[in-house]
Length: 498
Image (tube, rainbow, N blue to C red; front, side, top):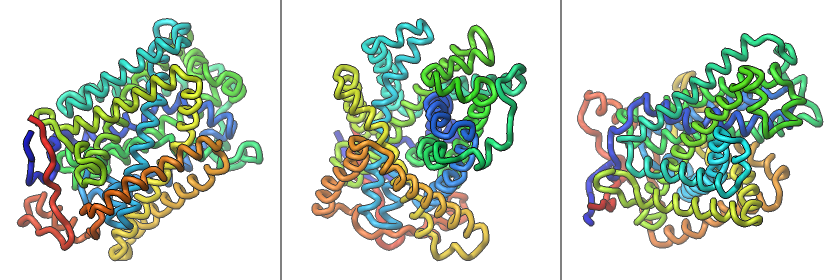
């Protein structure tokens, strides 16, 4: 083993991904088909025919958060993303908790999606097999291990697997969307009122729908965690995230409308578990349902990969800063990926998958944990929105564009996420609250430990928009490499294996 020093990118494979790869990654991270299957039944139960309005209005603040990521990434290209940005713009304690929140949310999601991925795969062969928990767990674990290997081997093979999974998924969804739009014999006629607020009432509140849809867009920000591995990332940063949100928005709206028109909200309420089969049969009788299930399988597998990437790159950045054990920043010499972080997250997630599949209490734990992950997600998204406003505070009023796209819109997104966080508290069970808030509280222990040991992460290193402009000029070949601002430091000393 040797010490790799002087690498500003911390030993990761630089320039491994392009702008197109980032766009594909963001779409895969959102998992449109999987989110359709998991979200629309719950959304219909919560808001009825007003389902199309919820993703529309929730997309607006989410785009604000995507804009925040875009502009923060220009100031500091870092695999830690919000973990680093919030620390430099707001306070290191908040930045640390943002990173911890992401790791918790991604790990819990990996557990919650593995067995359903196996069950959906078995449903393609024989629907009866999907009810076999042991077999579904084994198949899901197989998918998970395959994606863990893809992540560990790095960007040399990941883009091809990701493009295949995401491209096929989107083609299937597009085909269904077109077929649904031209389908005759609908249960209900399309109505623009579905996009208004007239259908919300005491039993179908917008708040209930927003609690579901607010997290449905989650996952596009995986591109920020891969910024150190992306070509020309400072200039093109955040484009993938914006495209991912917009594509996911289009898919969610089209399929909520299709559910209203083709099968009706009553059918969705009565058969939430077979929603996809009903919709598929309504579009293409005979085999439409299986094609939609295939799209969900591909979506879930791709999302397993992107979620694992988010967790491992955040842990890598934290290990590099010595705010968690430094071994998590160890990079494989040939693959140039954080293989120790990947192995650690994979082992922990698989252990929890086995527990949830074999113990009744484990199953209940996972169900409550899945309900609770909206809290850490809303928490770190809100911090990102606030961070960009603080970081650019001196330049917000220099132009209308800065005020809107760097100030007001991201701030609105942050306030929306804070509202989601606050309104979720009375909606969640005690166990879900204990997991969601407890996970954040547990992060205080390693945070205070690393702070007491004098980690450089906790030293003031304010973000400087002027420095970003100088870096843009340097990246474009317009001038010499700028000097580091006061209080900043190069990231080095990353462990690299032979």
